[in-house]
Image 1 (cartoon, rainbow, N blue to C red):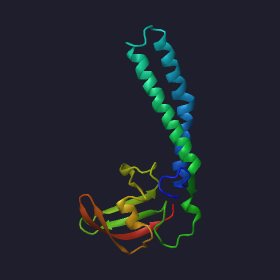
Image 2: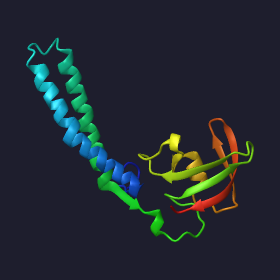
Image 3: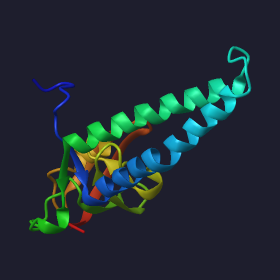
Image 4: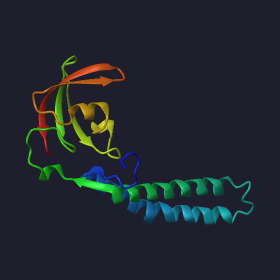
Length: 164
């Protein structure tokens, strides 16, 4: 019963879980009361059919509620992996920080392999099931890795694997 089963555990880092809890708290205690107040205010303006503020606030409320449900579900399924507590045997695993050398461009890049809600390409936090993530998992320092990307094949050498 894998594929899409609601109870599949989702790996997440300690920091990723913390960020979700902070967002959930903000949605429940700040955003939700604001939108409820905005709906009440818009309602007081009379005819709801032509009331753009009312419809915008209701739309925002629906977005907030669906995000709250999504975060609650993610937290319920979270399999928190604290990579700092795992003995570093040199393997690339979920949560590890990997320094790679692009063999074509000679450019070094540091990636952290994370869960899907934590992925942020601006920070080089990559989803562990992405093409690069999948090609790195299980490899070791000094291994050569080939990745099929939308822009063509890229070849890396793993320089360093850290559990930080």
